[in-house]
Image (cartoon, helix red, strand yellow):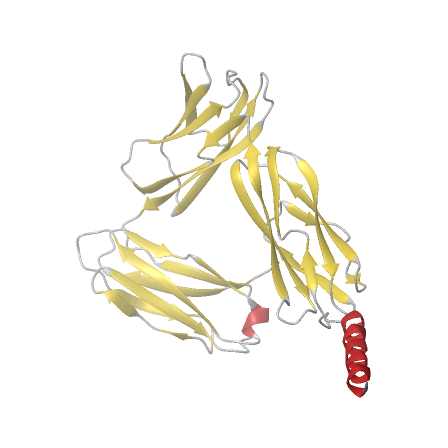
Length: 334
């Protein structure tokens, strides 16, 4: 009899424990999906994608947006605090402008869930473009001073079996012309760019032009190109910008590269810097051909109040231009 009574009490305790036990964590989060596949969207489409998340913990869930990885994602108002057992939503305004093919973009959030303080949410899918342009920017490489012309090709391909029709093409520079080469049904058109001298005085050169398609497309493109003028002596960078906020907390080093494109051996001399408390020297990475000048700004460095810019200057042995090279150092301005 006592055994039956004891068995009854144990059984009752087990049943009570089964129904009253709460196995939830203090803080927890569960997403409906952490990868949002939107399937297929047309180019230049704006839509809203919604990430849903549930508070599966005992205490309030706190969600904070850290950042999105590109300007194509714009965050709207979302549920920052979610009570236990409830769902929250994070709408994302997604824009497929200038996209084509398979894409992947990410949004990073922060929560108060131990072990899941930082979470990455992905947006993926296929962006359909009636006309694809390849490339949208052309790298033309190093250009010698005696080059007679530069060329760059941009291929416009129709994906809906309609001819590619050009409504307007505008060049931003007078020394740039173009021609069009079309296939039989005009669904593939190659725009050939021709750039004539002068190619510019600065070492790093770039340009752009505007294309508007007509017919059944009505698309606009800003396409570009870039190249480097191969001078006898290449110096890079020519401008150094200092982040003064970062310098208040830590030191900063920037190296100036000096590369020879001539047969004669080079060396650096007459090195001068018109600032104070900055360390600089000459290092030969490849004797007679390639040098570096490290500029080391100490932690807490203050830019002179009476100067807009500082200058590092030097000359190069056997430089056919006999040039005084000047590197401009200035504070970074937002």
